[in-house]
Image (cartoon, rainbow, N blue to C red; front, top):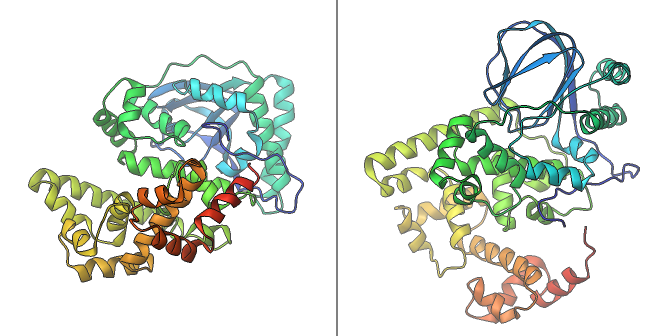
Length: 425
């Protein structure tokens, strides 16, 4: 796997080919709207008129024949001066875009030039003559499930014109938007606010402030949003295991990936891949609003009463405790010590873990240790089984082997052998 390159597939002719959704509609922009950013790629193809699109606070003039692509780090809205601006608005899931993004060179160039504004090109008459009828076909199809090939064709043509066109020279966005862009393009790396700050020449605290300013969310929430969106796009590739998808998207621990995915989608990755329907948009928006209110409350309590008050008030479900357990599963941690850290009773902590993860404290601790051990066995072949056991918190290698086999069905040695022989993507 090339570092920082998303998994892609060009095998469009198998029975497992399941393109993701695309929506498009025609609209006439006559007035200013509010700033927003979508959690999926967007395209605007201008049919007639002219107007202004504000992207990351920078005005961009649009006229008939212009094509612009916006990614999830482009906060945008239409300005006041819009004269009969008729556009085709295309919103494609990341999964569909991945099916057409098979060029490593183009992706690497994006990594090096993340500070640039979105690609804007002007289509010549021949290109417009090719694109406009295809858009009309897609509009007539009504975004139904039978238009999979048409979706791929339209996105491929849009991407093709953006690649070969002469791009307009646009001003670089202000630094706060660069922080959001950096998360989008480097989410596979082990990022922290401090590492992003180093890349941008500022402090980690400054990065936290930038993201709050642009999105209203903290660093960890933004990073999880980016990673889980990308993981969702990879679900369509059946040759990728869930564990592999989590690793590709930047999660070193499968348990952390499962927890974050479930928190955002309201279901496990396995249930999502099996085709169960996630919660509706209103439910997700309500949850996001509640999460933000809780984060704001925690920050206020921290300023008023210090760390202890924050820790006490943050335990309104098992996820906070689970996140702490993920980080400290290799320590000699006991249930009383965990309960004392969060100023809760042993019974209350056990109840929260059981309700959230359907597992007791010992079961969850062993599960996390085994998942971490599985990653170490694959990533560090020079470590002995005993050394791996010690690193994940087992003083007794026999207990480690027993717990590993109970969880994964094979011994650590057999697991390592199977991973070495497994074909690589």
